[in-house]
Length: 248
Ligand code: PGA
Image (tube, rainbow, N blue to C red; front, side, top):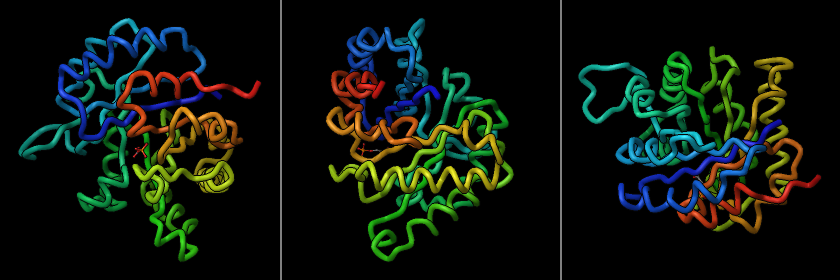
């Protein structure tokens, strides 16, 4: 299965910073053919990024979407607009959206459906908090988020990202064993929903991925890529992650 590695820039980078990043990042990864390389800048930088990525092997993603196509929804951005800006994918259900913007599973599900209907690839995020992990609820949380978030959603063009909240931006990465355990569980839930097709859904790990830990994480059986925040902001470090060392 082809790896999928995406940069989630979150609320970072102006237009000038975006252009500067691309000037060194695009040539640094131009020979990469065995990884789908994806960049998710903030909305304001999408157009500039699309321009800078023209003719490259890097695909553009947005960090969020609203489920209606247009209308009186102040501050929101629709699938039509994302496609127009050159996006191929959209991140949905990131824990920061769930946490700071009260995005519940039903909202996440509406967004996933709208994105899929428009032909956008979906990077669907799930993950437990430290409190939930310590209370032994990791699997329950993951099961609920996957089943509700993906209700009535087919597996085509779908990527799932497992991002333990306690590992995001904390420098505390899940061990390969912890990641593999939850990834295998996600694969099992997807199997209940999609049968054999679950084998083709790429499951990304996210949470303090760096050039130093990427090789061992990617070596896990059910880890098919990464969603990278902090370490994706510097072209050199994100290029190193994209060019991680394959086992064979
Ligand atoms: P991080 O963020 O790599 O900075 O931990 C990952 C994410 O939130 O997608």
